[in-house]
Amino acid sequence: MEKSHRYEARAHWTTHKRGILDAEEIPRTINFAAPPEFGGEPGLWTPEHLLLGAVATCYVATFRAIAERSKLNVAGLDVQAAGTIEKDEGGFRFTEIVLRPVITVDREEDCDRAHRISEKAERACLVSRSLSSKISMQVKVETAEPVAAE
Image (tube, rainbow, N blue to C red; front, side):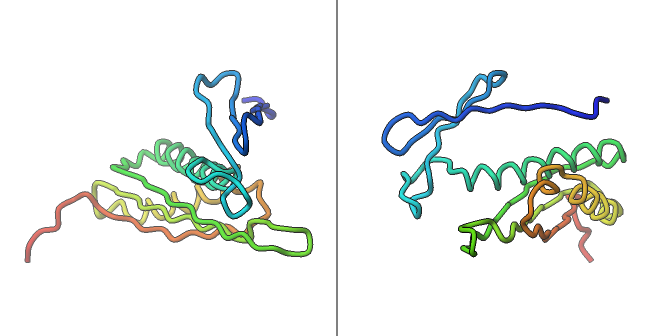
């Protein structure tokens, strides 16, 4: 595998306070604006949401790859990402991002493995590793296996 990869994206200002994000190899575009708190239009993706989305999607992709290599059958994975922005001497910045993955495995005996893989995915996610914000995790592992009545 190569040691370097390059990705490109373009952002274009369109009308009023809106823009479009695109990439040559991706057929769909994303409409975006600044958040309303910063004078943007409500109801559109914001750079802040896109950053949180990048962290969440990177975690999902990393977890999936590690689980696949570990031969862990995962019935489901949902990740919520929440970020806190604070103003410091240099301006606004993300100071903390909390990931809340909910991992569903088929069997109770796979719960510990899912937790371990979750920790590995947290350490290996390249987007999270590229940020200076504090990243914390609140992992929940569930089983799809029906619980027997006592």
